Amino acid sequence: MKPETARTAATLTLFALCAWLLHRLLVPVAWAALLAVSTWPVHERLRRRVDSHRSALVSAGLLTLATVVVIVLPMVYLVLQAVREAPAAARLWAHSQESGLPAPDWIGALPWVGPWLLAQWNTSIADPGALAELARSLGASLGFDTGRTLLADAGHGAMSVFFCVLVLFFLYLQGDALSEQIERMLLRQFGTSGTDTLRTGVVAVRGTVNGLVLVGLGVGVLMGGAYAIARIPHPAFWGLCTALLGMVPFGAMLVVLGCTLYLFTLGASTAALVLGLFGAFLIFTADHFVRPAFIAGSSRLPVVLALLGVFGGLETLGVIGIFLGPTLMAVLATVWRALSGPRATH
Image (cartoon, rainbow, N blue to C red):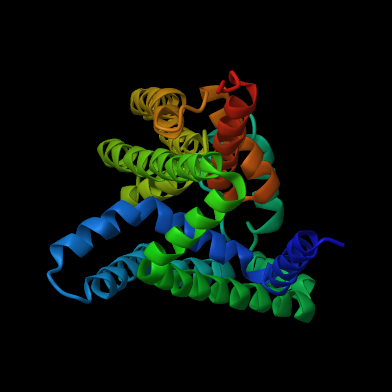
């Protein structure tokens, strides 16, 4: 065996072993890499503003702290909302024990599914003590193993968030050196086409994050205002749900439809119609024009490939696939252009 072949085989084996060792942490590491690449321009601007030899450390700490706040703040908001609603829930529980829990009028007024939901409600929790019996039966059906699995999943999720934040901090801190090493390796192995493909991937990641996150947040803010005008209870909460689901194409429409149905059941048909039309127009515009322009524009990725990357990534890899899918499609498009283009003549 030639020395070059043996060296390549040993290197690939080493990479495979490391991937196997870290396979349970690959998703948080991938999230950290996506966040670092997409926010790197902000990191560079912060470093230039901080007049210190430790500017990289200061910027890395600030951006990592901002990431933690963005992750934790919605959770804190949800906990505060739950605490605020706890007295009402306690009164509802006591009332269900004493007098039962009659179905609200709006349930039966729901189109198509209203009568079925009303029948299920009356059968399950309308009688006195029926809600407590239902809760006990659900708790018994879950069992000890299910509870242990849920606790293990929660612990794994917390560990994933911790390692994502930790890796993100060190990527900010050592990102310049790592980027230079990756570029040298690609240049040595693949020539300038390798570095060009790397730059295309970086541009695709930033465009995808901007297209999904920023557009989703924009839709959530606008719809939150619309919910407030339409007098939907807790408009900030539903705006947050719209923003989170708005990162998935057409996902925000689920929240808009739910709020529209709620207004219909209250008899506010005009408000429901206006809210539904405004939400449909906003989400259609965001998903068909604004988002593809962000994702496909700077990387010269055809819109159809950008959409295929988003939906294919979501179907195959879950939430992180929404970001990785368009990036892989952009790299594929770059390689295809290099292979199908005219051969350079000397």
